[in-house]
Amino acid sequence: MLHSEIVERVRALYPDAAIEVAGEDCSFEMLVVSEAFAGTRLLARQKSILALFKDDIQSGALHALSVTARTPAEQSAASGAGLVRLTS
Image 1 (tube, rainbow, N blue to C red):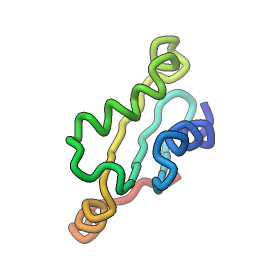
Image 2 (image 1 turned 30 degrees about the vertical axis):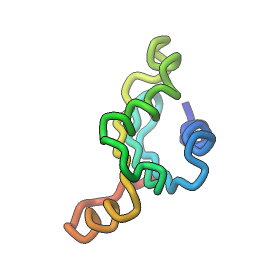
Image 3 (image 1 turned 180 degrees about the vertical axis):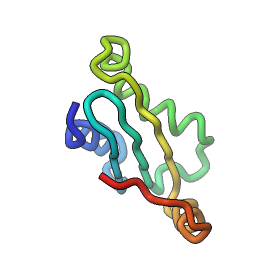
Image 4 (image 1 turned 90 degrees about the vertical axis):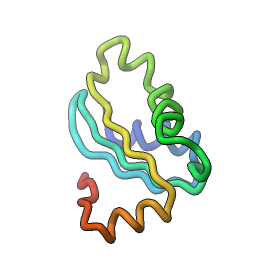
C-alpha cells in the first residue's frame, strides 16, 4: 500500500485533516489532525480511521496501522511537550 492511498482514504472521511504517514510495505504509522475530532473520544477517532482499512487488514495487504488522531489544539500541546512528529 502506498502512502498516497492511505492519505486519500482518510481525507475522504476528514477533508480538513492534516495527515502524516510513515512506514512502508504493509506496516504504517499515521498522525491525523482534524477539528472534526473535537468532543470525540480517542478510541472512537481511531476506530473511524481503522474502519477505512478493515478489508486491507483482513486480507493481509496491510499488516499494521498505528493511528494517532488529535485535534489541532491537542497537536499543538503535544508539539509543545517535545513529542516527535512522524516523518514520511
